[in-house]
Image (cartoon, rainbow, N blue to C red; front, side, top):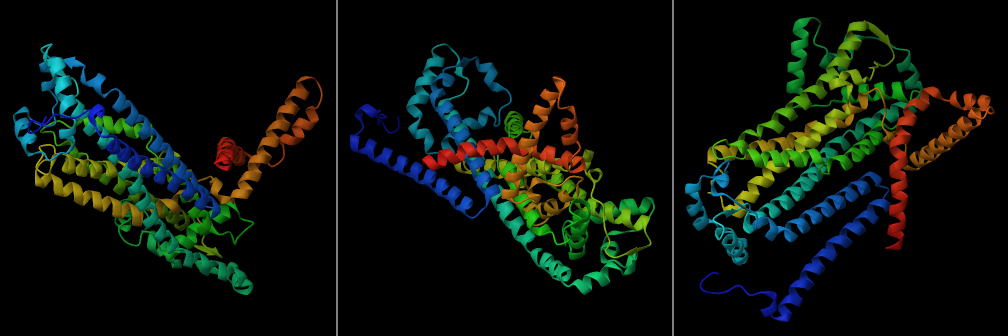
Length: 503
């Protein structure tokens, strides 16, 4: 109660007020739902299937937030009536108990006024037992808001990163068009193919090869570290890596549009990055546990994504350096173009996908830092004890902005091209209609093999089974991996299409 005025329940609230508030809330919710629905239709119409799937991922996150909101709302009074001893609540506090009175007077939160009646009720329930609530209704509401802010900021930051990173990647299209023009000039293509060149005269080797020996290894890492901050991918890098990919995965098609494939692969990966996986929620819980007064966890943890981002950028640059060294150490002169060999061995633990996992974590952790800062500022004020001193606040904000900028304009473009230098290609190498056809082909082959196995077990059809098994074995190994991943989403998409048609 404030100023002797009692809080009114729904029983004594004018009906026009209730109806007006419900109308506004429902109208806003329906407008957002329709916006997402028509946004999805627009993306499907434009053939942007990966972005459409990313939008579906955003819908899933919103649904998860809806469940979290529902659980917090339904059980808030139950949780607030869990009573514990005073001593339990005096340890691992974000602020000192002496600051509580001052913080209560200085806070400008509008939510405290509307929850004061419930707060007094639950507090009185525990006070009657000589105990205190485990978590007050107001604190539970603040946690509720923080979860929503975190999810929204994460999605927004991911979108901004991909948008700005995509702008940088699309600048490389001019290089792709120039290469395509050279390939269409048959005479120039033939002359170039039969031309002998000293390896050290290639621009790619000049930029990336730093000599041999122990010193060269150290210089290579130092050069890779610095290279991510300026001209992370040059024209010679793009031309050489493109040729290495085509020579390994589609040698029969030298006019393959590598840039288009790279954009499709990045859009596929964006669908994974925009979501909040379970291990990211674990990170949030661990941070909330360690956010103890005097530990300055919110400050030190800001350096985690910073160092991870620097390490990822350095490693991606070093992959290019490694491939340049492999060519320069094996050859003195070459005929035609300089060709590098893609391999999973260039990546940490031989897994290119690990880079995507780290970028996902970096983006989420950075979004978490920014969301936490603004949530504290709006909820408790800039002078809150949780906010800390200015000397801790400024570095966090500077690091957050730096991470967002570097990830957008350097690390993400590097990831887009360097992760194509693995042993295997991605399913984005095929157009959408080709992917559907391949999935159907894989399902038919699977059924035929099952039928052949049944026939062979009954003593007939063994010859037919062996003949099917020998077709396209080299191509089939990777296509089998692709088919396993693609079959399930394809079935799910058919169900979604039926639902959309009904809508």
